[in-house]
Length: 329
Image (cartoon, rainbow, N blue to C red; front, side):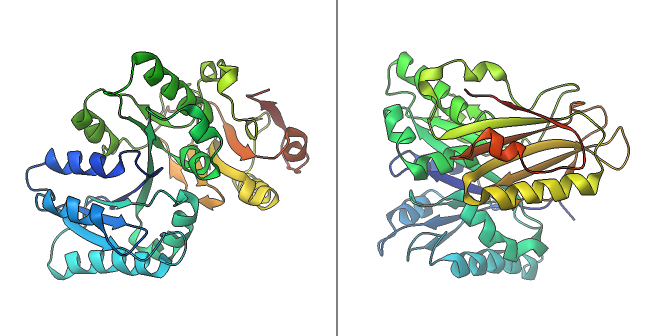
């Protein structure tokens, strides 16, 4: 039995290079029968699906063309993924290594992940990849709720169109992406094929011993900070019981609701030396993941929120001592 299938939720604004990224990835593999691509178009004519079918190189391509996956197509998406998995099993083939869901420019990854709860038995490893168009001014992202929701939800942000902009715009795009989402891995490659290769690599979650969840240097360019998005850090000062931490995180998710954009935490496990990674996109939590021995000694949680004050999140009670700080002011 191989590793569980990686489901890549590929989001990004309209025209930001999602289809080109997938096409370059498929072009870079000879006959990639271990990959399936699901294309979600808004509208009856599925142009992107047709383009990808031409360059699939053995990959399975399925299309959803009635709307946004986070709205009317939820059932169709779940059915499509279930059918893909069932067909592989019937053919006595191992599970797909990856399924790439190319979302429309309107999709919000958190809502897509919530729909995927119906597929819990498949134990998919979900990875959110978002394209950032370097040729767009930062205001296009800062002023768009859809763009902010996509970028903050990302595990990986891919800078696109880096080959058609001057170096200063490419640098500005990278700084903006890192400032909006300090938890994401940002891919800044000149070559389209290199961007595609890095975007769909399965890096997992690797932490060096003693590493921090965020690099605070990304908060220096204050002019790039989105006025409604804040990043808060909670350090666990006292030893926290595993169940108490889970209850506390659920209380925070309940209090913040849709204003919680992203959460990532390293907490103590059953023994004092254990470290467990917890993540959420919006209020949808991924399964806890035990880190390798000696990884990430710091126990802390990072919350990216919108329209939620530090004093409000500090007011959520916990049975253990927490030291709060705002990484933006």
